[in-house]
Length: 147
Image (cartoon, rainbow, N blue to C red):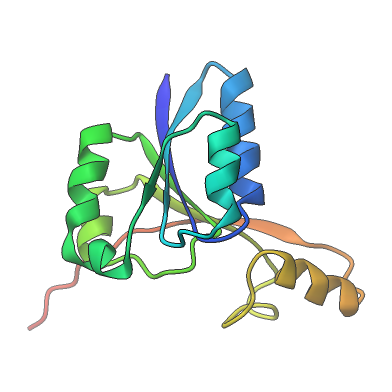
């Protein structure tokens, strides 16, 4: 069984669907939800699905504290599902090819500040777009050698 850790900052509707699917599917289990917002609805959704949570600050994220917590869980995949902070390079490097970001989008048309969650959906509806994509982005750092 694959182990997944979710990162979320807000309502957690995508995170909840992943948690629920993991409960009914024996191929993976959501080990924990990591959240930077103590008032986020995703924490309640995790509680309802019996998924442990980790609440952290931006300082925790940037100091490396989370790397140790994540390493103890040994996740096969880290999914950013509505996570609004930028991951530090050290965290990405600690989990090569294991971090994906999912979000509803029509990039670059509906990207940028404020374009997350329901705001993307509403902008698409307001502009009578014919489709909405769910994008999966693998996060990795490509190292270059400077001369």
